[in-house]
Length: 341
Image (cartoon, rainbow, N blue to C red; front, side, top):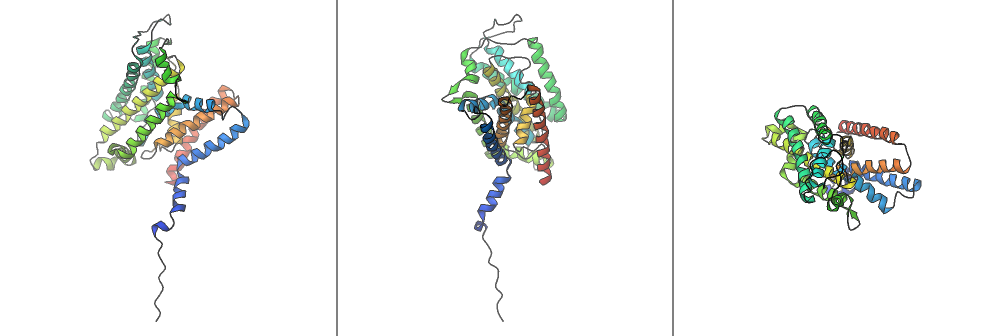
């Protein structure tokens, strides 16, 4: 009687490459990189100015503040929340820094100006953002107000404070050391881009290697299970809002430094760009999933698309419609991802 020949089992290492490539290609970051390359090829044919180093660095500089704010929103969304007040927080942080560093004497309506060192003004702006984030976290965690409603209300409150403090006037007259934060270079690289990359690395390492980063994913994935396992859910969710506000503060100060002016309408509507950047980059609105790299790439993609509309001389009102379409598309993409998973 012949002995049956058993089929030879393949070791897990026998076919690693196809599975690896499938995982890489299925990641949202890969899709964005491919789309950016295709857009670059198309736009290079449509406008000679697109691929010039000055234009590419301008895209990164002009969208660094959005990308930095998107890092904070990414933390909040992964933990299962949302922050609609991020644009107003950026305006408030920028105003605090502007008042702190301004030399005064620029408008008929005089706000207090203290002429503090730029480093101190920068720190005060970030602290102002963190304060707004702490209030958001208190409303959501302690008072148990739905995040959408809590942060929507704070959007109006903080914007109203900015407009009320300035009476609709702008704050100007900053020292060059402050404006260099938004307009200067470190070698060939704009300073805001250095901020963006540095903070992205820090937040990425925090999510990947710090135990609280793991907890953030766990809470967003299943908050009930996280509570049952004894995780400090309330403290961690509050922390994400504080960090979101602080990162929005960094972005808000950089906007003021780049433009050389703090206006009451600054960063108006930025929350839409910031949230869309995160969602396009693969951050799930349902929580529990997302990466820092995806959020940054999402911001770069939106920046490239807006730059393309300018280079192609599309009228501004069509640009607004296009932005709204991008936001709807990002929500649809997130919905499709949830169905597949």
